Length: 223
Image (cartoon, rainbow, N blue to C red):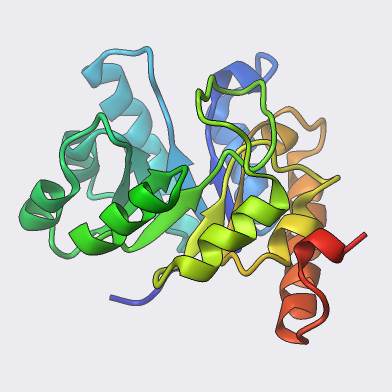
């Protein structure tokens, strides 16, 4: 399986759309250069989730961008999405790997113990956070900041995606911490021009990656 490009990982939240259509905003986001999409729906029926996922799958296929389904392994399989993103309260990671060996499996981690679990049980990538405070979702774990993010990334043997509170003010700094990419929700989905906002954020992340590869001082020293 080809390793996905995690540079600009966009997760959905329809509450951030300001009344706009999800597919329209995602189309603009993909046109702006999003490299992976996670469909994240928490408060809808399985049928509605399936219907939305099927439409998003068609859209991401047009752009040849992987689609990850949050939580729901059944939805992933039903729409033939590329993978699923799990947390500690979802179906155990080894079981998902057993029934879907060819799929991308992501796992959210907040600390070293969860990181080791994700690696040992077969995750393909991990979402590391919360890096910064966010109003998009309630997270009980303390924020890591860029120093904490870098410490976890340095212990990981699989790609890491920075999650929570990433926006145009801090994406560059987060990208210098050794991550494969940054997960962004509200800064893109709330933007008046999602296409242009996506382009701007992708450029910031790519600049951070370039700086990281040059071995210039670590993220907590980047201003």
